[in-house]
Image: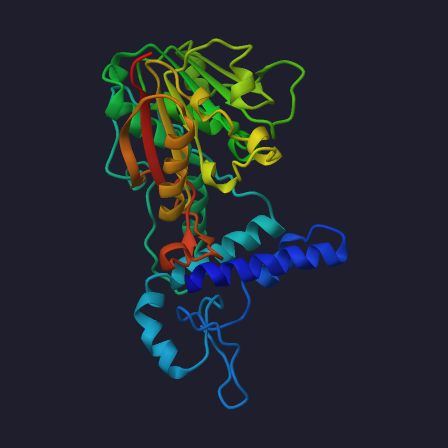
Length: 361
């Protein structure tokens, strides 16, 4: 209850300031309210006193305590996340001052079907943290897992729930709720085909109102040399609309539908809510007979409410194949969590996953 009140207070402060200034606050301005310099101890939020000043972590500079006692009580918990907070800060600075983190993708193609793996580090080598400072190798690992989390989540789920995946020659994937995040470094989706040696054609369809409308629905993306040599056909299409509207003009039945960091539960479902109507109204349209629907969430709390919202509004009978589990193919690029869901300081893209399929017609 205290955490909810604290989160509400800070968000209301952002909204109030925006109204007073008659403009939206920049991200930097928002963070002044969302990450204030107050004690990290759960329920404290003290700003310090004249006799006992605030103490910052001298390593990550992201956490503050109001007293020696609170710092000592939190030391074990903070030690588990201090380096991740440092990595989040370094990654934020890089993407703000240099460019979006898009390291080179692994180019090898599997010659035989190997299936999935216990986690993403079996596809992307995790470097050892041997130095006190965050290394370039750690930063590249974080960015690379952030790029490949989507394709590898598809591979992991498909290997579990599409029995003929190893012998398939074609695959159709819909990426619903797409935005710039899905389109940036679009060649990353070809990585899925690299893990499926029998694939000769793969169609990726990106659907979302935030996408820029292309003059032609099919987006020209050069294939890698190996896929070209194998005469594979990998096509990319975009629909700058909601999934519900897209289905009125496109009757294609996908094998897989993926919604990354879905946010189903973020919008009010009250009548007249434009955000809901323009976003996820008609969740049942994400379901196709014979298709697998995958949606991910940033945090455990979001995953639970996202699944509950979906089941409430899909208007169809479904079987839940995976229920709010931690996704083994999640990104390892940490992001500071101002809400501190489940008392966690960071979250990751695609961190939790639910998988459902339609039952009956």
